[in-house]
Amino acid sequence: MKLKQCCVLVTPTSFGAGNAGIKVLLEDQVGQVIYNNSGKPYGAKKLQEIIGNVDGYIAGLDEINSDVIRKAEKLKVIARYGTGMDNVDLKSAKEKGIIVTYTPGANASSVADLTVAFILMLCRSIYQIAEKTKKGEWPRVMGLSLENKTVGLYGFGAIGREVARKLTGFDCRIIAFDIVQNQEIAEKYCVEYVDRDTIIAESDFLSLHIPITKKNQKMVNSNFIEKMKDGSLLINTARGELVDEVALANAILNKKLTGAALDTFEKEPPDPNNPLLGLSQVITTPHMGAHAESAINQMSWMALEDCLAVLKGEKPKFPVSI
Image 1 (cartoon, rainbow, N blue to C red):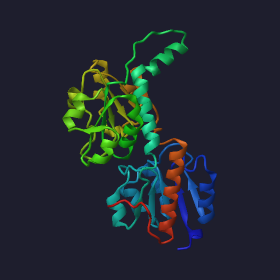
Image 2: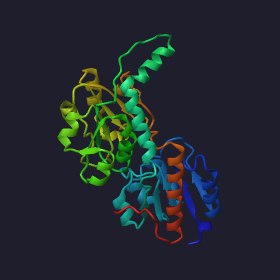
Image 3: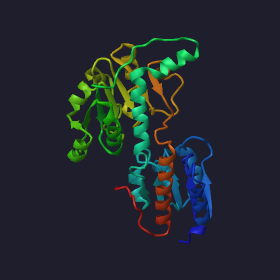
């Protein structure tokens, strides 16, 4: 296949941000590039309208279901800009011979940065105090010290490990739960592996770092929260579907939990009536964990290189095992 005859769909709105050369290279290599200018991920209905003539697809958080795959008559590759595959019907892609790739580790440092920022903001109630100060108030609030507190990393993959590395200078206890354990890295960052019940019960700050699966949807529900340490705080920079948002809001209102920091929601953007949005104890951001210059640059190059490799008939560097 000659690349000049190919059409590539690019839906992450941050693709190539800060490095114009990425888009220049793509547009020079292929015949047509279609960019997502809507400012948000595409739903399945929109994708079905445009996917028919697409050969390569650099995909964001779009809804790539079986109906989309069925309409993809020419598609050879879905190069996922990120790591999560919960929005991609991998089975349908495999059945149609479409190669799926991803960008492992590219956003680990930037998501870890946001996670640590969340922890520090929760410690000192920075979000609430900053808003009050802007209104002319001068609040005197006793904050928490991270020293001697327990930070639980629920998931100790690339992002969890980066969080641990960045926390090593704060003199806090770091515990982790993961099905796959790497003792060498754990010892390097003074991390103690514990079981699931222990990390839930002992964490002052419980931070989620696992992918979404059918088994763990709304994992953080009322039963889970009841087992958490009284007054503890939840941080989620992973997937919004991991959390029962009503249960979390109720737990904060009932003062079982002190607060939370959330970069992801079950529905994005969240419904204006989402109970978490009205709580001053909850820090909310618009799924921005990977939106840092270095992460965007690396994800863009990795996704682009694998997309072009498949279109050239070559093996991609980061295929997803299906």
